[in-house]
Length: 267
Image 1: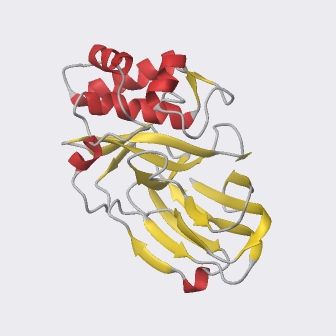
Image 2 (image 1 turned 90 degrees about the vertical axis):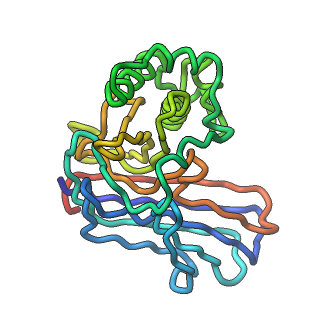
């Protein structure tokens, strides 16, 4: 499937600043589940940006916008061809061993309730266990855009039984790590089934099995990713995989807006 993506992030501040550093993880990887047909990033200073691949395999631009300004706009757009592999991503171009993704973070730390839920999902094989986790989290944590915020932890979201895709992914990761299964956070895009256009910046989790490699699990929707999903970046949690992350010195109060439009076809 061809998917056209337009992702715009805009920052506005109440006073001008002349120093900023932004790490942009805005270049999707090519692999067995997707091929990049075209992609471009527009941002002040992008032509001078340091460009590198981090340990997780993310393509990163480190941008320092020139001159004084009270705003910054970052735009990424292009066309990706996606393939339905039943969620199986397989091997990826990260340089760290899967076991590194057993490391907990503040946002993915376990709680006694998550430990109990994970233990009840243990099955004969790792793959069966992961599908049991997927179903358990999807059925017990309702989708609610007003219940959590960017810093909500897996333990907090699971306790309230409410959250958004970020929370579902964090809970899945925490539960998988309880069972000694490497798991990581994925940020990307979702074309909603039955719609030719949708605003859908999305997040889900990937877990590792010895025989299949990395497999995607979207607990928010209760499915493994299909060709309606496009992967962007990975990390230990939402902060580590953030498409745009950085600092502005002396900028004052911030007004942030993010617009993501995902369309079917080469549009």
